[in-house]
Image (cartoon, rainbow, N blue to C red):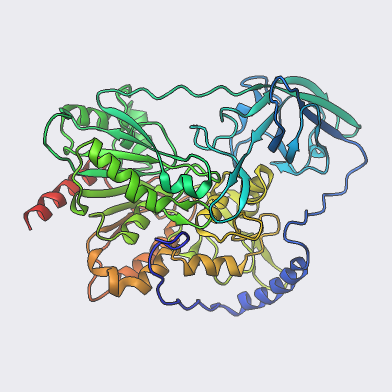
Length: 583
């Protein structure tokens, strides 16, 4: 299978036209704005806000005793009013993080200084000049990049995962300074010198138990693509009374999701019974059973005798490859299907046939479960895609990538525009906007190297630009949507609904009854909107009919909602194995 194309390319799909005249007026205005910004270089910096001269300045360096070779990567300064935990560990992502600022460094030598000042963008405040006067604890961190001489002819620098799942504040080998207490007065010229004095230690190796095993293999396909050794991993949950010496073979459920060393399906022997309050809170969000209930059923042998497996496949751009072949990430889909799964089937006595392989996952894992099923329709016997990432680019969360001009704002008419939310509470309050989430990614890294969700999709779905880095769906500073990038993603089959629509005559017969989608009607990230469109298509299929199952739950069900306990899904999978084995 060629990199960047998951399946034979289907016919082009038509674009949806604007539906409202006011929207059309807004598009004309937005086009004018887009033309104005498009004349600038794509990587030109947005002019910083006007500030008085001076202000806080942070100078970061390291000695040769800490690192001998020059450092290429991104240097951050974290700023907090709290002493504990150390500032880097107070980084908390989009909605709850402390202020931080970041700057790229290229071959920074020992003793040289990287400078973060009022020109340096950050998040959640724009620049250090926007800090309030007061006492703070500050800390510097260097996210160290690795040189990748890729097989496609591009050489790029990005962060090589070290077993932490692309959590840059915890990544072994990254450099940190000691936390320092200072007083900052943004109205005065101040320079704070920080020295990177230690390297984050290696993580302890995961420990196997009678029920949980950890697997790590070097991928020949991915190592060839990246030009350095690349590894795939898995965490395996074995059924009660599993006997490695027996001839018994087991069905497998492949649990998709973000990088984790935890056991699949929330199996946790240390889990305690829920209190009444905890139970009420859980049932207000999801029908999934508690960790304790699931674990006890598995330990008693009340669960179907299956093997559950989670994949570990971080890339230099994200903690997860989306389990597909990608121009930027390389042949992860092929590596999972032809290297990792066969290895697991041999090692753990799994049935090596599509009728006994199943997929389940939530959010990013929900998209992956669905994508693996439809890209490999005969290799799996059913996918349970729970609250999946956008499965139709007409509803890429809330916006429409095919007709919108901006990912940040909806232009109502010549005078009125509104910010597009990226995340909401189930009762409708905005948690963060698309502009805010994009600002976070721009502060975390350039060239698609933020390690966050939007850039993850850019790397998984997008083309490679002339500099070797991913083409982005929209400019993370201006919000301008890149039509060429969106067309590439559609034409390479990453819009799952569009792909299914074009390919149904050839693959539909292999997907009958295999697609199951659960998503709350008030999903935090508006993921239900794309699922409605996918259901609309699948419900209308004929020759054959898809017999797909979609469940949305009662009102106010948020991200993380699933229709049934996980054990019920496993029982349905086991019943399908028995049924198909008899046919």
